[in-house]
Image (cartoon, rainbow, N blue to C red):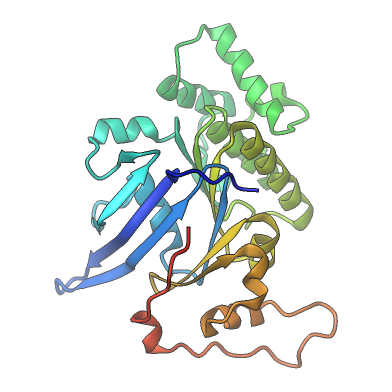
Length: 292
């Protein structure tokens, strides 16, 4: 269960992210998003592709593309004002206190560097200096902590020599080894089969319990989010349209959330045809209360 404290681990108030087109017009990809996250809490963010889920996570780390225009009334992490923070200090937070697991290790791991080389680079950037032997031991320990059976072999392997599940475990090891207080997982199981997905979630579960980490879990898999997260935030076209406890998502009231649930038919006695999502322009102006 999430541990509730008076000061949230993370707080965003009225986040807006836009991009200018060739004609100079500004198109908002995130429209007035607000959320809070407590220490040890698992917050799921769901919605269609393009709804602004990943941009929200990247905004917290300051990893938005240069063309993005980002504004917010407040964006705080562990009581620190991220908007007033220098670029150098923001970079120090990334990887050390805030980590992000990307959805496909094939695109997030450097193909011309071994696992050990990449992990060594991450440790050098975000921790104290170690001797070559100490660094090797630390890398092996990190890989073993995510249940990699032969960490010595994997440490010397290149990304193309690893399966999708093994690559994802390497990514998790790199991100959680410094003991971050906030972990953003962007579709961490999308490229994995069901069995490996459950193993990866089990590893994340262990890491969260060990470090008392707050988790923002971005996913399209509503049943998975319902079973793994404490609370769910539903996004449509850059806006939050509904927020509820994960266990109550199946009883959600917003028509958009109901349509997303209907797109996951049961295996037993499925409907004859899937319903078509009918979007309503009014959803872009309706407000959704964000409960802490």
